Image 1 (cartoon, rainbow, N blue to C red):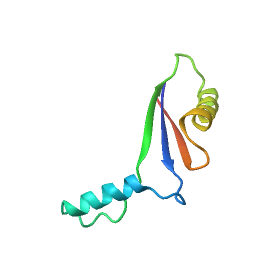
Image 2: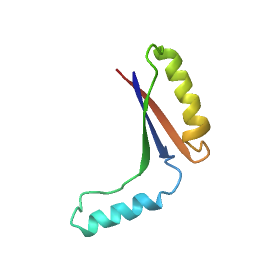
Image 3: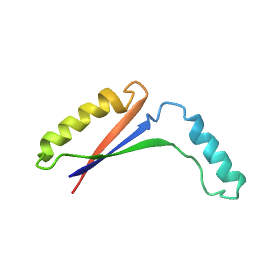
Image 4: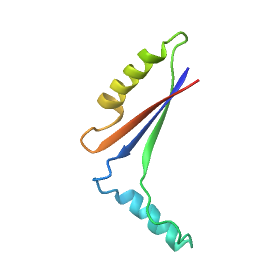
Length: 81
Protein backbone atom coordinates (compact mmCIF):
# COMPACT_ATOMS: atom_id res chain seq x y z
CA UNK A 1 0.00 0.00 0.00
CA UNK A 2 1.14 3.52 -0.72
CA UNK A 3 0.14 6.88 0.67
CA UNK A 4 0.41 10.46 -0.44
CA UNK A 5 0.58 13.35 2.02
CA UNK A 6 -0.18 16.84 0.74
CA UNK A 7 1.12 19.76 2.81
CA UNK A 8 0.19 23.36 2.03
CA UNK A 9 0.12 26.72 3.73
CA UNK A 10 -3.10 27.59 5.51
CA UNK A 11 -5.27 29.97 3.51
CA UNK A 12 -4.70 32.69 6.12
CA UNK A 13 -0.90 32.55 5.62
CA UNK A 14 0.73 34.62 2.89
CA UNK A 15 2.42 32.55 0.16
CA UNK A 16 5.21 34.66 -1.40
CA UNK A 17 6.46 31.75 -3.51
CA UNK A 18 2.96 31.19 -4.89
CA UNK A 19 2.68 34.91 -5.65
CA UNK A 20 6.02 34.84 -7.48
CA UNK A 21 4.90 31.85 -9.54
CA UNK A 22 1.62 33.57 -10.36
CA UNK A 23 3.47 36.72 -11.45
CA UNK A 24 5.84 34.67 -13.63
CA UNK A 25 2.92 32.90 -15.29
CA UNK A 26 1.22 36.23 -15.95
CA UNK A 27 4.37 37.66 -17.53
CA UNK A 28 4.55 34.58 -19.79
CA UNK A 29 1.07 35.26 -21.09
CA UNK A 30 -1.02 33.04 -18.81
CA UNK A 31 -3.36 35.84 -17.80
CA UNK A 32 -6.18 33.50 -16.83
CA UNK A 33 -4.25 32.34 -13.73
CA UNK A 34 -5.56 34.42 -10.83
CA UNK A 35 -3.64 32.89 -7.91
CA UNK A 36 -1.19 30.10 -7.06
CA UNK A 37 -0.66 28.37 -3.71
CA UNK A 38 2.40 26.13 -3.54
CA UNK A 39 2.93 23.13 -1.30
CA UNK A 40 4.71 19.82 -0.82
CA UNK A 41 3.79 16.24 -1.69
CA UNK A 42 5.22 13.17 0.04
CA UNK A 43 4.82 9.71 -1.52
CA UNK A 44 5.19 7.05 1.16
CA UNK A 45 5.32 3.29 0.70
CA UNK A 46 3.95 1.26 3.59
CA UNK A 47 5.06 -2.18 4.69
CA UNK A 48 3.07 -5.12 3.29
CA UNK A 49 0.18 -6.12 5.53
CA UNK A 50 -0.28 -2.68 7.09
CA UNK A 51 -3.95 -2.13 7.93
CA UNK A 52 -5.53 0.92 6.29
CA UNK A 53 -6.97 2.34 9.53
CA UNK A 54 -3.63 1.96 11.32
CA UNK A 55 -1.78 3.51 8.37
CA UNK A 56 -4.17 6.47 8.21
CA UNK A 57 -3.76 7.20 11.92
CA UNK A 58 0.02 6.81 11.83
CA UNK A 59 0.43 8.97 8.72
CA UNK A 60 -1.70 11.75 10.19
CA UNK A 61 0.51 11.70 13.28
CA UNK A 62 3.66 11.78 11.11
CA UNK A 63 2.28 14.63 9.01
CA UNK A 64 1.38 16.64 12.11
CA UNK A 65 4.66 15.99 13.96
CA UNK A 66 7.24 15.84 11.15
CA UNK A 67 6.06 16.79 7.67
CA UNK A 68 3.98 19.90 8.37
CA UNK A 69 4.27 22.90 10.65
CA UNK A 70 0.75 22.92 12.16
CA UNK A 71 1.01 26.62 13.01
CA UNK A 72 1.12 27.69 9.35
CA UNK A 73 0.44 24.54 7.31
CA UNK A 74 -2.37 22.06 6.82
CA UNK A 75 -2.15 18.54 5.43
CA UNK A 76 -4.22 15.83 3.78
CA UNK A 77 -3.42 12.10 3.80
CA UNK A 78 -4.52 9.83 0.94
CA UNK A 79 -4.13 6.06 0.92
CA UNK A 80 -3.48 4.66 -2.55
CA UNK A 81 -4.27 1.01 -3.28
